[in-house]
Length: 303
Ligand SMILES: O=C[C@H](O)COP(=O)(O)O
Image (cartoon, rainbow, N blue to C red; front, side, top):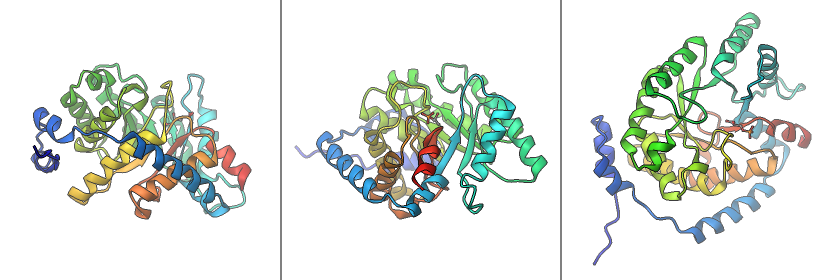
C-alpha cells in the first residue's frame, strides 16, 4: 500500500482562515526523522563551522547575539551595563551592535529609561508569558506580554506550555501562543519550545508547527533554564519546519538557538546549519539570532 505523505496543504489553508483543527494537525504534522541522516548532517555542520572561523564571520556572530541576563539578582545598573555592551560590543568599532539586549520583564523599563536618556537605540527583548516554566494562567501570560511591551520591549520571548505539548494538546499550545502574539501588538514574538523537555523530535516538529501557525515571528529552542538547552539536532528539526512553511506560504519565520551556546565554534555550527537548511537569506539579524549570556566574551577573545 502506498504511504500517504502529508502535504500540510490543508493545515496552511485552515491557518489562513484562522482555524486550528487538532485532527488535521495530527494528520499533517506527524513525521519521523532519520537519526542517521541528522547525525551525519550535524558532523558536517561542526566541521563547516570550524572552517568558517575568521574575523568577518565572528563579527557577524556578534550581530546575531541577543545579549542576555536572566538572573534573580539582575539590577538596573547591571542591565544598563549590558545594554551599553549590546550597543557597542567591540569598543573600537561603533558600527557593530548585538541583535538585542534580553532581560526579565521587571528590568525592561530600566533599559528603556537609559536608551531614552542617552538617545540611543537597541532592541529590547523581554522574556514573558510565564518564562521559563510556562506554568502560569493564560491571563497572566498575556498580561505579562502587554506590560512588557508597554515598558518598552520591542521583542517578546515567550515559552510554550510543555504540559500541553506532552499531553499532545497542540490546540492549547497553539491558542496560547496566538493569544500572546495578539498581546504583543507590533513587538516581534519569539516562541521558545523548551525542546529539552519535549522528549521526542516528533514533538519538537509539532511544537514548531503549532508555534508557526499561531503567528510567531521566530521560533527559539530553549530558555537557558532547562537541563538540556540548544542542540544542533533540534535546530535541524525546527529549521526543517521553518523551511517547509516558507515553501508553502512564502513567509519567513526566524530561528533562534539559545541556551548553553558559549563558544565561537558552537555558534558557527548553527550558522552552517541555517545556511544549509534555510539558505544565506536567513543569515541576518532579522531572521537569525543566538540567545546567549557569555558567547560575546569568546567572540571578543577570538577577534
Ligand atoms: O535566551 C537566552 C538564554 O537564556 C541564554 O542562555 P545562556 O545563559 O546559557 O547563554
